[in-house]
Length: 75
Image 1: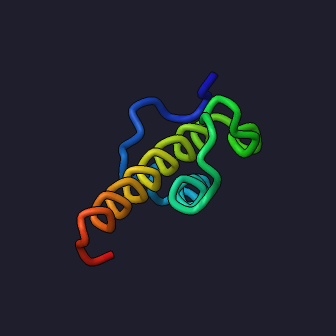
Image 2 (image 1 turned 90 degrees about the vertical axis):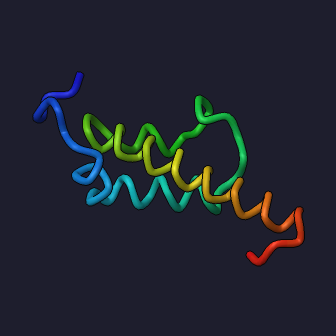
């Protein structure tokens, strides 16, 4: 259960260390099911949410860059 403020903004989540950690793992980490990701268990409350959002964004960037490379675009 999240005990901190309800209604936290996306900008506030991006400022957390958990977001940066999740972004890095999503962008550069192993491609495994997020459900099986042991790093998620390291975080609690809003940090867990921040990690999830960061991971999702990092993975999106990975997929965008992979698609650009496959089409011959600049990476």
